[in-house]
Image (cartoon, rainbow, N blue to C red):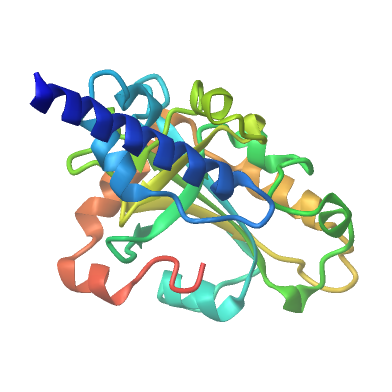
Amino acid sequence: MSGGGRGTSAFEEARARFLRSFRRHVAADGGRLDVDAMRTLARSAAHRELVLVPPYYSVAWRMLLKVPARSLEELLGEAPGVRASGRCVQHDVSPHAVNSWSVSLDAIRGPDRGFTEPRETARVAEPEEGYVVLLACPIPLNGGRPRRFWLNPDVLYALAHADFEYQREVVSVGSVGAVWLAYARQASPNEALSWDEIVDEVCRGAPREEALERALRACRRRASPKRSQERRAEPTL
């Protein structure tokens, strides 16, 4: 009985650590998620609901603004144009890297997305300021094997007493493999699109789940192990 008590205590301690880290993570000053606590909770029947992505969420979206042309070129393996949609790249990052995604494209395409300043994104973008980049990736059942996607946005915000529930966030830990990519920037100073308008343009080309799966299957067939190593996704993102 004492062993069971210690186990329960360890899970409760991990739960408290994880919820504190999540509150810091979504706060204005940001913060690192306690990945060790997440992994501990995944082993607990009583607590794993907090950290496992529900099976009905099948696509993760990641939006990045003001991505430098050099970073995008490193990701694509070639110089980017003004805009493109439907590119396939390899998300290849450190095994310990934590990236934020959302299960809702609508949550990150609007000006109130939360991780950008609305007054800043409402202004006209300059061509030299960089790109809007949208990534999409299927979420494997149970986050994958080994598990790559984490968090349950349906219950986590309320239990952590955290803001920004509308962002519907999940996170990836380490590389997720092949991802769909679209990008765009201001074509010229005369185009006069705001950042929010460029975001909307990029999101209009987002694929449905079936089309995303087809595109990434083709991507996996084309990608050689050597090329996957050469094309390191998100080098500075």
